[in-house]
Image 1 (tube, rainbow over the protein chains, first blue to last red):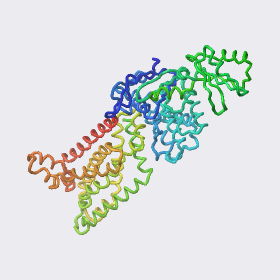
Image 2 (cartoon, chains in turn purple, orange; image 1 turned 90 degrees about the horizontal axis):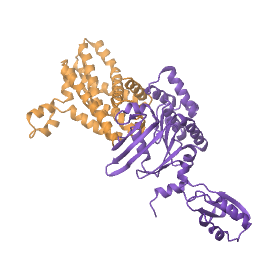
Image 3 (cartoon, helix red, strand yellow; image 1 turned 90 degrees about the vertical axis):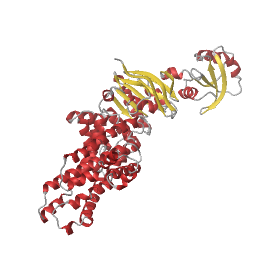
Image 4 (cartoon, rainbow over the protein chains, first blue to last red; image 1 turned 180 degrees about the vertical axis):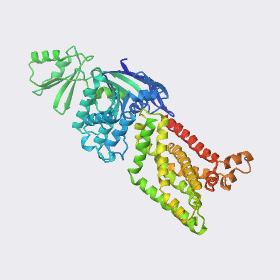
Length: 313
Length: 244
């Protein structure tokens, strides 16, 4: 059975407010699914239903063949969950907490120790093992949460903002860890950090106002941006009216003058996202322009995100 | 069952990880003693029994047990650890039972630590130790009943103060349900049978019978039933809040 997580028509209503509206998707082994969406879109609520913390108003989730509503305990055994905010018992030490989780998950003695040591190793908690969790920094608290989610080597990992509050080095380490774990597991991470989606996810879902608005690989999603395959051209010499010539090219939709961190340049937008660099390269050569910078742009996820999630102006 | 034990151990140990345990125990012992010796005229009575000691237990529990119970679920919901707790592979029954048993065991520890009274009264005279033992058991059961009520109410709110106050109020009603305070509100419009039913819920009635040496199984069953019913309510309330 390859579909390790199946979400079927999940809905959640809080009184008159519909937080999650008929969300369906599935995740296979080896996939890392990124949940993207504005705040309040329903990402965490969806995760809380998948992990069995909230009862759905409609629909269900099936984890490795176990229904989270009807067969909750079996499903929960397969899941490693890092909740939003990485809660943990504040008066326990990191070591004591992991020991508790190991015991609850059914491990004892040498096996428990082996797994705890492995989790500590992977999340680099060795330094803070004997400190009460409430005294730890935000980053370490999150790593404790991650360690507890990994302890039982679950087939399914559901991580709510796993790198929130971590410094860039720690973010990098956590992403490497997720990538290393990915082949054997099905992982869902929710994040606001779009570069994380590129770095770690094999697929991304954009949720807004409780509905799934887009579902595809990060590359496919980025390709929906008008910047996809656009060309940024900066000429070395001012004054040449390159724009007019460029507009005449068949593959060019429009040309805009723009200024960014690297200076002034022309942004040449393609028709239908098809590559235009060859035509532009030919034109530059035949016209004999001196080029200061020439670059093919990749579609920007944040443009796509904004286009999809904001109501049309 | 295994999960219940793991949860029980964690909860009980966590009581002692903070000053909570020590403060509670000291205050309980001091107040129990103060009530027995001053309010209960322990010495003046000249009788070798522990009635003046046990008589005040309902009132002692009324004030102190809600403090134990209020944090059972309200604190978890406030700190967010409930999300971790309820996504672990444990049944709701194991979760509710584990927490309750840990709180009950802690109350039991506080109760056991009053043993110096028992030794004292044996030193001073020849009390009926059977009655004293039964009284301890009855007090322990009553503490359990107060705790079960408190645990269920603690599941209703994130705010520990609300949990405390409401628990104290409900426990008070149960304690004095045989007295004019409660019956007075019902007299005049409720049928005689209903009045008797409500009066039979009184913790005081059942407990005082035990303390006076009348060991009736029905009183033990009464407290055990209260515990059972409120633990069941506790489980339902936590489930319901999940849907919220």
